[in-house]
Length: 178
Image (cartoon, rainbow, N blue to C red; front, side, top):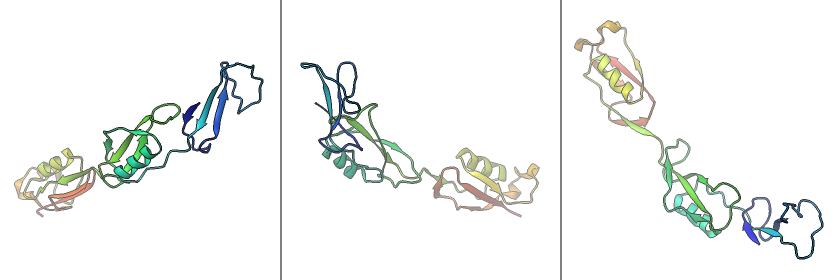
């Protein structure tokens, strides 16, 4: 008998019995010739849901039901899961059997980037520096754009403040002198 995980069929219950033609005798009744070879697949129960768990707990839970967990995790940024929590599990294609290898995808936390301090820079210089880092920049001024390279109109404040970490793509407002 082949063992296979199933979230619907309890542990130690037959999932399917098939003959060489592919007839499933659990799904439909049929006649089996004496001496015919049958493939029996038996459930070993379900796989634990480890999403949201810490990686060591998730690894232990999956290994406790007979799965092999890849030694190297994949990592991704996530707004929904704290650093170190399991975002999802990558399973091999097809039916899942004991000793199959799965891979944990673990959160690196939010994708944070440091906001540079742009005070003292010209409007255009500050705006370009922030946009190059992926920020959405709002210039809080009535100064005409053709004067944004003038040192007279340098940045006097910014929100959020420089040298703070925020999510990549966040909004930054800069305010020049005047």
